[in-house]
Length: 625
Image 1 (cartoon, rainbow, N blue to C red):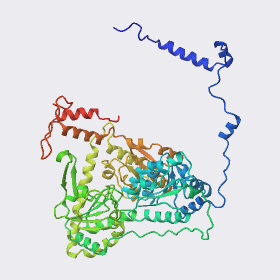
Image 2 (image 1 turned 120 degrees about the horizontal axis):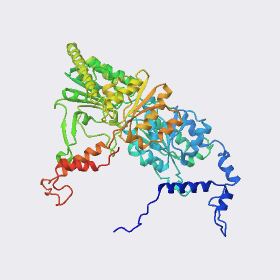
Image 3 (image 1 turned 180 degrees about the horizontal axis):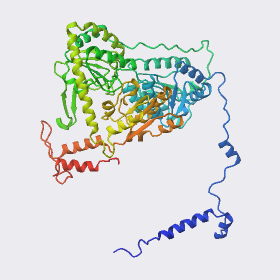
Image 4 (image 1 turned 135 degrees about the vertical axis):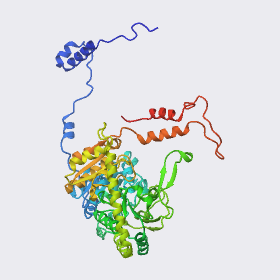
């Protein structure tokens, strides 16, 4: 039996009155409080002393300027090198390991070309550079702090690697163990910080002299800006930044930057590809990151119209106008007799399907989308720098004509070769193919509008309506859709008139969560300079990774319209859990050397149907409201 008065009730009004009385007593004049307080034999020392005049001065006055190194600081020369490449911005999170370069950028460089942009996180800084390039076509520089800052940046660097975007990363590092400060600076140093990202950067270096830095930085810029684009990394010693320039008889110089011509397809392979395309009954073009510039879109339209070939734009970039009658859905490959892939990140996934249904002992089902005699052509520069560790190169696909070359650079020669290969007796068939494509396009657009109308008045608002309501506000402006990160969120391509290269920038590349917000701010920075409005369909979970980038946007006055896309759950996780639970219920049959297995009696799944077990498990899955 419960004890009497074990939990005495407290009157709420008396409690609040007591709180108010205590507060009033605390705010009363000292003399009044002293009269009320009982006498004490020894005075209590205050818990905190007021700051002295010296402390107040030290914390409020402008710090005095510290003495600079005698002569010309090495970091000043580094700024001169950076300025020759017309890098406009440096988004970075402030840190001590690149303190000298940071000071020179501001004081010596005047904080102009490049301008330092304060970021709250290294991942945001790199992602801003990522988004900026996809609008401006020029890379940005970002700075990282030793081991820990670079570890923060790695996810965004990997996204840039997978998305074929050039980003120049400098990591400060206290290299000289005999002179580096003890404690934290030593913990944040390493023999080789570049090792953290070497598997997903195109090139890296550790300069040991100012002349070495000048050559390395220009080389890094050239490599990053040669297709296939990609991030590069330079480890920069703090001591090298801080030491003065020495007169050793040879004055350091800054190498002149000359762009490297992008690799083009072999002439013989181009002619063979043209022959196959010209003689095909139903050629299909598939493009992923083919258009590096607006001219790439123009070239792809020329090739498609010359062949009257339907085009599947996989959306790695804006490759082909969604309003063009040759636009086709992914299913168009099933009737093709020749398929040409332009900068495809996943050729296997283009011509095959994978169903994650738990069959084949849990690995799912594979099936082909194309006819056995369909001929495949590939033009892809990524074949030139594929590495072994990270598997962004996807599953292996046999290709009949494969060119390790930049697609956009190869298109002019391919167009001329196709024009020469088309015989007069083929022109009427090609024209008829175009008429058929117009009918198929009209039907596709009609189906898209009908699908968008389903649930138009639903609450919460449907994603199709979200897209169209947003478009209604920007349609008369020069707009740029800078991010729409959910992989299956394809309403913009199905509904919007995407006709210009800057109206769709593609996705993260590596599907790293946390990309959309900072990349959108970086893209909006470039669009701000060009007078455009930037729009982002922002996933809710993605924003939670790096919300501090919104401070950077506000601080540096970067305009961005972000429409929050709350998908209300971890849906991929839920489906995977449901499928797994459904597959585990019951007994597993004996398969060869795998011994028969049954669930112990009394287990939580014993006797449940697959549907009941899946429902129970899904209910327990963590789901966001």
